Structures are given as C-alpha cells and as structure tokens.
Length: 107
Image 1 (cartoon, rainbow, N blue to C red):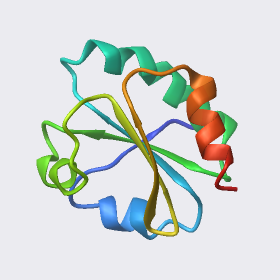
Image 2: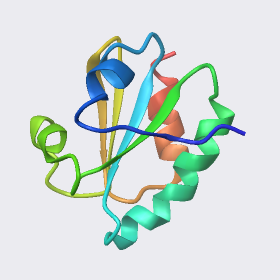
Image 3: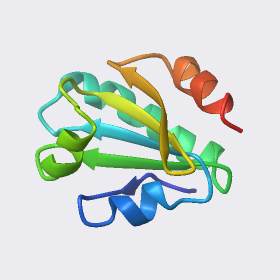
Image 4: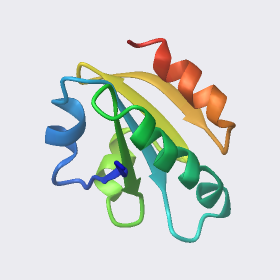
C-alpha cells in the first residue's frame, strides 16, 4: 500500500515540479485540525492513484520557503501540479470527491 511522500523545500523541485505524472501536494501543519481531517483522504488516494499520480504532504512550518513561493495563507491547501505547472488550488478541508474530480481532470 502506497503512502504519501513527505516533500520539503529541498526536494520539492525534483519530486513535484519534475514529476512525469500529476502531483497532489497537501500543505499542512501538525497543529491544524482541518488538516487532520483531510490526511486520511490523501492517504487513501496515495494507494488508489499509485503509478498514475503522486500524493505528497508538505509541512508548512518546516518548509516555509515553498509555502511562501505558492502563497499558502490558509491550511489545509491542496495544490495539483502537472508538467511542473500549478493547475489546481483547493483551499480548506473538502470532501474526497472534490479533490479526485479536480485531479481526474488532468489525466
């Protein structure tokens, strides 16, 4: 069973922007209640989309450079990248169907 990849300021370029498949990045923090609500969704999607899309998590407290680069002001924020480009932004704890629908549009 696949699990989300924890990305950092140091490997964001390689793991997200240079990925040959779409990437979902969950910007979160340990103290964030709504972030804990969507964590299981990202976990499930890591297995469901294994090989077709990459699920990643980025702790905004420990990786402020990347969070600032993408203007993350509210968490959880889920960004979807394809071909190194930001193609979707989802702010807040949303149902799984909303994330999968936005991701599926980029296959």
